Image (cartoon, rainbow, N blue to C red):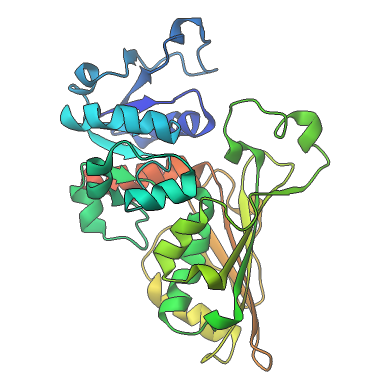
Length: 333
């Protein structure tokens, strides 16, 4: 049995991790308390079973892996001790995604306090990353939810040179409210969200940097708009581009089929057919559909994931499976 700790288990991603690991069958879970006021905080509903331990290096010495479902600044504080204790660390925050440290500071507006760990961290988007590097890493940086869908949708087409990047690429991304985390705020309160639809962090959303990193697209050629929809979970991204060197939607689907052959968690729709949120809810799938008008070169991609699963906890377990030599789909299908 893999002994796994979860710091940040009260949040939405942490709670999702608990549920996935329950059905994994090969993991013993420990809930790691990292807050000074932990004794005053209620236990998550339905999660009284897993034992509680301190989020300390001493406690981590008995663990094989620690998941950090914590804000970036907390992940930076906790990760060094856990790594030194010998546990593999899978961080669900943005703390170790962007290199060098100056790139992190630019997008997250905060200094990076663990530059040595940042340098060795391995970015864990299995379908696009080096799986052997993920398997051998001490610290795995789980991708962001928006970049997971956008990168899986765009990277194969950019590599195949069928997108005219000079014409601009627009990613119109909508997310359920759980993507903002569990911490209360006016913007995500019931009365503000219900019956509403709002845009935020236009142009300079911090997740833009990951999409550029994963695809090779230049910042000047990529426009990203994040929007909040009145739903609990799910991300749907509508991506607009101008095509070249390709004659049909079927040709674009063929590029995806070649790139993702054998990938369990990428599902492709027939040309002109589009995925939706319910199709991926509570799953680790990324569903992709394409429409394309050859005479004008107008193309549209729809990429859909569950932000709490493929966009967070599910992808973290996928990375854990790789790190311990298990079937990549274990606990996820």
